[in-house]
Length: 46
Image (cartoon, rainbow, N blue to C red):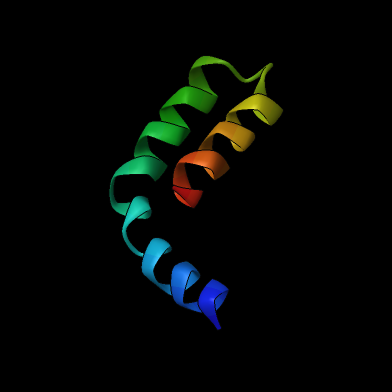
């Protein structure tokens, strides 16, 4: 229940600003895609 609430709260907010930054980062460093995905996930989890 707590996880669902957190997911519902987190999902809509970061995509407004983080997705754009995330895509920009992926474009800049396509080689470290895994690292960027982990970094993005960590940012969303906050």
